[in-house]
Image 1 (cartoon, rainbow, N blue to C red):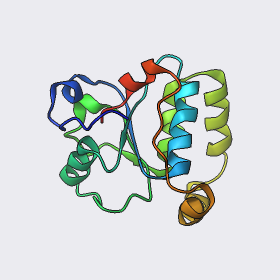
Image 2 (cartoon, one colour):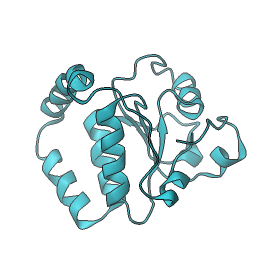
Image 3 (cartoon, rainbow, N blue to C red):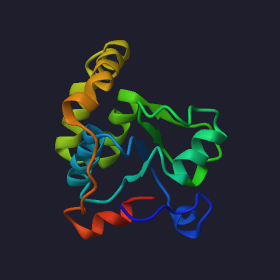
Image 4 (cartoon, one colour):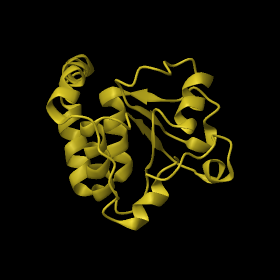
Length: 154
């Protein structure tokens, strides 16, 4: 990914719409982001690693853990990031898929939403414990499509 952008930098301020924070060092998390990028033909979602300056500033502002990267955080409107409006874990994934809005994303969101949140999030936590052992750490590599880089805050 590109070098970090300061949380108050001009590029970060000009972003509007939903942002998904993910563990930038996790192989599974990075694969999920690339999967979402493929589904998001309209470029509706923006992404930022939890370890980056934009996510760290947001987490700190809202009293969320800044050193535990075991969950994703979905911010529905970056332009209103001063408000404590966010979703975590599978509820955030469902919201992200719904924002993408393609038929396949909506079907996937519907399938995940069929299960109660307590079951979804329990499975999420179990996978989270094993993700580094199964998928390993992320080895940075160029994005398959150059235009996708515009969807990252830092």
